Length: 58
Image (tube, rainbow, N blue to C red; front, side, top):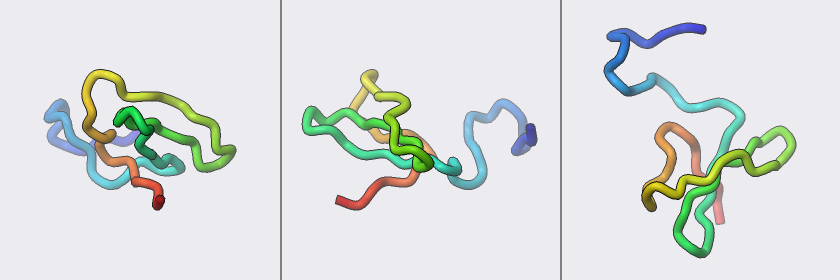
């Protein structure tokens, strides 16, 4: 697995591949696998989108 120096600074270079995200009616963001369309993860800690994951069109 490659790293994006400097190590440990909390950011990545480039987008997350084969993932997209959409917002639920409650305002939470859900991450989806673009290969099979299954939902993978929901962000419930706050109402901000996942970092580096593309957003789906409505």
